[in-house]
Amino acid sequence: MPDVYNWQLGRRMSYPFEERHPDRQFAFVFNINRCIACQTCSMACKSTWTWSRGQEFMWWNNVETKPYGGYPHGWDSKLLAMLEDVNPGGQTWGYQDDKEHEWPYGSFEGLTIFEAAERRRLEPQSSRALGYLPSEAEWRAPNMHEEVAHGPVKKQGDRPGSVELPEHRVWYFYLQRICNHCTYPGCLSACPRQAIYKRPEDGVVLIDQSRCRGYRKCVEACPYKKSMYRPTTRTSEKCIACYPRLEGRDQAAITPDGTPVETRCMSACVGKIRMQGLVKIDAEGKWQKESEHPLYYLIRERKIALPLYPQFGTEPNGFYIPPRWVPRKYLEQMFGPGVKDAIEQYSCPDRELLAVLQLFRATQRVLFRFEVEKGPKVGEVEVTMPDGRKKTQVIFNDTARGFDAKGEEVARVTIEEPTWTLPAEHLNSI
Ligand code: SF4
Ligand code: SF4
Ligand code: SF4
Image (cartoon, rainbow, N blue to C red; front, side, top):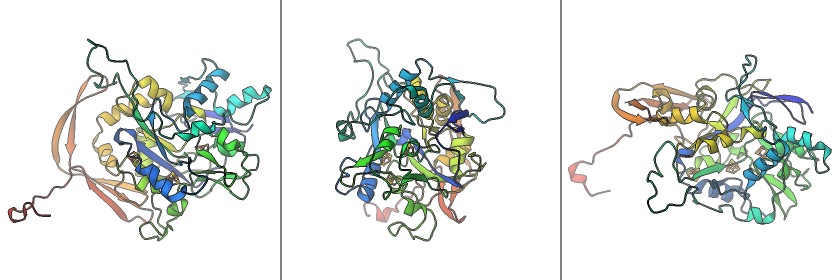
């Protein structure tokens, strides 16, 4: 297999095809801390793309409760167990002093799904990526175990503190999931018809319906289980990143004038947890430095948003701000070694980071640049950090400004929410 560079793993890895990279890459950040599991995102996607016959159990966007929930059921724990089976005790991260390569989270020393498949090649069921085909029953209940917590059963005399930071003793959290439009997609690698492709302009991964014959190799090989089979057409389908909106030509969106607009699931998000963007990629697959791009800033510069299961090796382009209250070992398995640093920064964001965090869901336009206008000091708060240290956070009433693809200002948010007082004569009126 060819050798490709995976920046999330900090090393080269095997992949069935040579590297080829888009000019820009569709990417997104989800802030888990803010999600209320209202499922508005799931319904926005379903009512747009998957409301027809044969798509009844198809949720391109889903929100599941971790640790027990999953759509399809057990998608991640099953694959983690399979990888462990191929490489017992070896799925670990290390730290090499490698100046030549960027490795923001360390270096993954275990096997990716592609490397694990290579190691298993002697066995008859081998394919290009380690995976499995979920049963019909596993797809049937998209929100099974909703809000079921993990933790010790409370007994009489049990010590209190199940909700004390840094780690709650009884915990759960919501995980929002769409296709990650991976740099090295598992689905694409496995398709015997070469029906799956990555668009050169924005890195969106699509299935050509006219080529697909429904062999479900993509369903088996996608580690996130975001390629789904439709029995009425006998083809597989998946999230299309709402590409008419990315191209700025969705008639249902704000003025379709060619300016990229956020996808349906992003723009409908009630909790304001989602931000989407198109980041610049160079010929070698590196993210070009764009310090004023909100996604580049959050993901590459501040490393506050982390990839989902980077160890699978597909270089997913979905990134998450991890939940503050969840045991770190669990989070590190899910998001890699950057968890501690990300939570520390999120617990007490500095002036600039706090301003950029205000831009989530401030506009339907895709943001390409931000600016922070400085404002006066408005307060101080004492914050308890995850390690118990006390820190003083100084709050300024700064203004975060967001600009679209054409360079026009499309968002302007202040740290202090503006308030208006009704004059006495209008009290009790609306
Ligand atoms: S709409 Fe936003 S807040 Fe609601 S479930 Fe989806 S991601 Fe969470
Ligand atoms: S998440 Fe799955 S379906 Fe989406 S691009 Fe990656 S491998 Fe393919
Ligand atoms: S990006 Fe569009 S197609 Fe993909 S999950 Fe969101 S709403 Fe559905």
